[in-house]
Length: 242
Length: 242
DNA sequence: CGCCATATTGAATCTGCTCAACCTTGGTGG
DNA sequence: CCACCAAGGTTGAGCAGATTCAATATGGCG
Image (cartoon, rainbow over all chains, first blue to last red; front, side, top):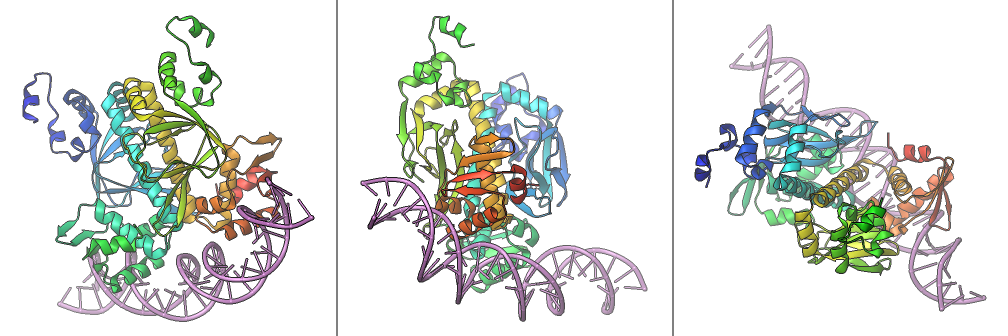
């Protein structure tokens, strides 16, 4: 399918993009080969260590990014230090806030993460030229909105037990886990402290509920971060999703 | 400004649209006069009584709407009946979920509300024709996303006291209130039960915190629904916003 | 005026928080 | 090689804020 494009003369997708995850599911999928080439000239690819900021809350943002791999957490902080994670982003999600030059959230790598950044003005221009690109961004915004609203139900109405189960279920369904039969296996991308900030709980409560889920046989934990789910339906049920 | 358009031959904006709130701030502001005329042919304007559904959760949706006046609440419900309001929409907001035919939330009138509905296919076609329209919708989605994330902080990390103050502050800043000097006055568009569902609290807790805010002199309440805020900064502070 | 839905108040209970101690793990240097 | 240390995670006891359940008050409307 890519083959015939290679010979249309004009140009072809840059080599670095070919193996890139964002080239397929991400926003780059909405670009033509020649747009990709142009974007690529001004893009920088870099690694971000866990805990390092990509964008700061209230900061002026000069660039947009794609997540190539890893997990990025979006969080908000109150003046007295209370913190809430308001979203998790996975590859190949787009990172940035079109139409506004200032970010209302902090974006920070939760795991080792690789991102590909572009200058804002360039992308803004491309958005105004390429219909598909705007549509893609619009569509991702709506997906994030749906997710945010789902999470509001979790934050507002679920018990600590259900919150922790909801989190595990979310990760299990987003981080393409090892599956064999009914059993699902994955590594948690977040520390207990981050999980607490995501769920609006304390680390102690998260820990206790994890222990409870473990004792109930709904999950098996190895080395704190490694989780085995023998039966995803039981976890789903514990999460209060129907 | 409208005057010269009246004489461009082709057509002019339909009479009903002229006085319409959505014609200015709403999505109709992104339409040309001729598009308005076409849209108007297939649009229906109607009143919705408080408590009546506009869209049901999981329902197939055949139309989009504009809110002309009133307040609409978006909510989610769990299987066991627990409910969470995930957003409030005010005139001239757009109601609907582009790209998806099924709604993940229930939209219900909180107050007496007037809406203007359009067939989905017609709007979808216009969106693919008019750049400005897609941009406008995209922009509203992002606004809603920002609001949802702000509210996640409230749900996850604020105390009952701060939650109630946050709600009052939200209404005070959205429902264009009477202002005279520092004093702000408005009517609550939601019942105590709705407020509780919005804040992830019980009605009793909402009531107690209202009483507390009243006793602290931050608000004055008349007839349950009518609220007077002598000093908006004190309310803002009680809400934990900086 | 009296009724019904809505809101307030009170007392007992419970879920999740606070504070403190302890355990595990992985890295470092004697 | 192993003792030590620091960071992250778990566990326990007591406490506090929010819920539950029940009784009472208010106010909109026929």
